[in-house]
Length: 175
Image (cartoon, rainbow, N blue to C red; front, side, top):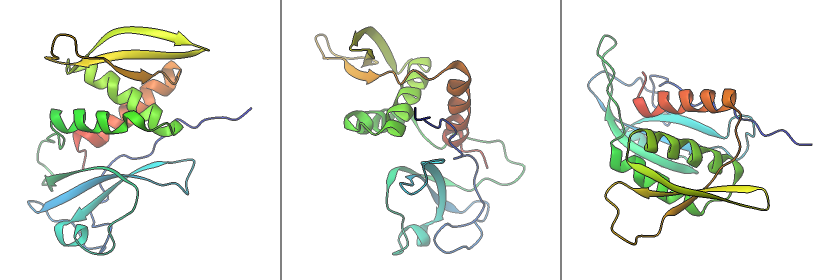
C-alpha cells in the first residue's frame, strides 16, 4: 500500500532571490512563484522568491504552477495578501485538466478556499467507482453554464487542516 504525502512545506519567504542569492529589500518589487519539484516526492510544491532581475534571468525555474508580483514587506509591516481573487480563480481553472495526485489535492484545497471566499459555489456531487467528484460554478455564473468537476482526494481532517494552513501562508504572503 502506498502512502500519499500531504505535507507541503511551501511556507514563508527566504528573504533572498532564488536565482541570484541577493537579499530582497523591503519596498523592492519581487516575484513569488509556486513551483512543482518533480524530484522531491516529500515536498512536491515549493515557494520561491525572486528579484525582478532574477526572475528575468536564465535561472528561472522549470515547473512553475503560478506566480504573482509583490512588494517585499518591511519587517514590522502588517502582512498583505499577494494574490488577488482573480489570480486564485485562474490558478484553479488551469489546474483543472491535471491529474497528477499532488495537483489534484492542491486543486481540491484551493476549491475549498474559493468556496469559503464565496468565489465558487458547490452545485452537487457524484460518485463513480469510488471516486467522488464535486461540481462547482464561479460566482456570477451565467444561467446554464456547465459546472467544473473537482475530484475529492479524500484527505483526512488533519491532512486537510495542515494543507490549508500551509497553502494559506503562501497565498497570504507570509514573510
